[in-house]
Image (cartoon, helix red, strand yellow):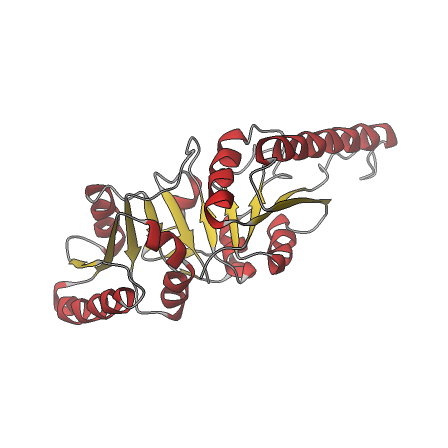
Length: 275
C-alpha cells in the first residue's frame, strides 16, 4: 500500500511554505500525484437592509481571487518538478469548507492540512473545521503542526481503542508506520480493564508484524484516559500520533483515541486520523 495521490489543503492569506516543503518530501517518497486545494466563503459584510454594497462585494471578490492566485503560485513554485504530476482546485462557496474538501477527497489517498486554528471572531470565512473534515472525507487526514518541515517519524504511536475507526486508521497509516524507526501500540485503560487492553494491543502488534512492522505493545493506567494518553505521548516523544476519529459532525463533536479535539488546534506532533 502507498499514497499515490495527496490532497494538500492550503490556507489563504497565509504562508504555506513549510507545509509545502513537507508535502514535497512526501510526494517524492511515495512517487505521488499532488492536488493543491483552497477554499473560502464570502465575508458577511452587510449594509442597509441586509444587502452588501456592490462595490464592497467587488472589492472582496478581487481580494479573494488575489489570495487564491497567491496560494496557487506558491504551490506550483515549491512543488515544481517534485511530484509525479500536480493540479490545483479552489472554490468560493457559501457552504462548509470542510464539505467541499471532503468531496474533492474522492480523488486522493491522503488529505494533508495544517492545524485547525480557526480565524478571527469577526471572520471565519477561511476556516476549515478539521473535525468535520475527518468525519466526512472517508480518507485519512494528516494534520501537520505549524513549523514542521519533515515527516520521517522517529516514533509513531498508535492510540488504540477497540473501534472500527481505530482499525481503519491503522490500516490507512501503514505507509508511515513502515517508515517509522519505532512504533508503539498504546491503550489507556483502567486497572480493571488493563488485562483485556493488553490482549488487544498485543493482537495489533502481531498484525503489524505481518506487515513487516516491528512494534511494542503498551498499556497505561495512570489517571483519566485522556490525561494518561497525553502524558504518555509526551514521555514517548511521539512525533506521529495515529488514532481513529469518531463523533457526530452535525453536532460539531470530534474525539480521537481518547484525546479531545484540542489537539487539532495546536498539536505538538503530526496526527493521522480517519473515520
